[in-house]
Length: 378
Image (cartoon, rainbow, N blue to C red; front, side, top):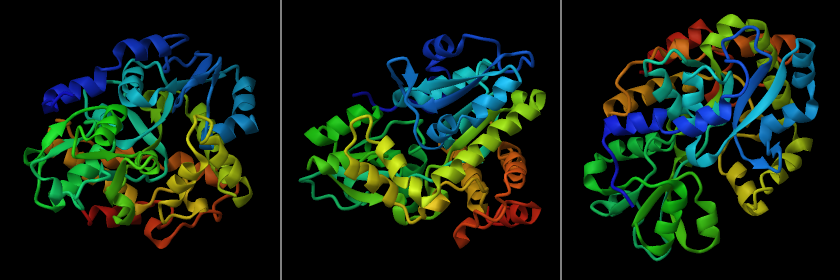
């Protein structure tokens, strides 16, 4: 296990750590900014099974419906899914965007913030919000620890630069703590799970606690489940700004497909099919169900493409946290980073304006009044 690196090294490793793999995997075809390009590439957190990319959620629904592939084919554009393995999603996707070898990607907030705070010309915009996801603090099953305070001075594992680092930083700050109060081990999720299971660390901050609980080797002692939406990891579907500028019609088609697919996934009769997709990698069904049921957001609203007030608040706070903790140095205009215009167009074109209203905490589609209200919160 290696003790966590400094902020400068972290920035470099997260942004360019996937250079070889990212460029090799995404290098085929014309660059994303080339209007004459014949391949549209969408990165997803997934893997190959045989020669096929294993899709899930909205991505699965898009491929099942076939609408996007057909519409792109009419314009002589081929759709290509690019799987980014979970162990290195951020570095691979960021490097591909930085080199203009990718048009769209589904991934989370912190890697996107790192990319957009850098000097790259491959910056992006969030065009469809994803699902707020939970983070968890776990301890070995036999530990007496019941809170983060109980781990002070002890060994705490966290994979730095990953989206769930921000919720940990929020938790520490809320308790008047910092990394200096712990022995920090910067290790990947697989190594972290093994370490907490064998007692190699006293605590682990993760997004995947349920298999550890299921095996009886660890217990959850805190989570973001009862915290505000702004505390959760919150990514979504990102588009290269260069592509948005040069190929606005194609970009709108892609977002229309995502909204259309989200509508299908959000219907109760399709819930079982989506849940069973999550078991294809060997995850027990009970754990997949628990992952979906852990949040207090309804099945319908968890697939909502709306831009709620909390999303803007979340990104403003996330950018501030990242700067304060040395993860980024540059600043980000959040109003330019989050672009709801394509979703608004899609909802209108698909006659879905009244389908998602969301719980009160989600508000409605973002407008200028909502942005002004959000700014007053930060």
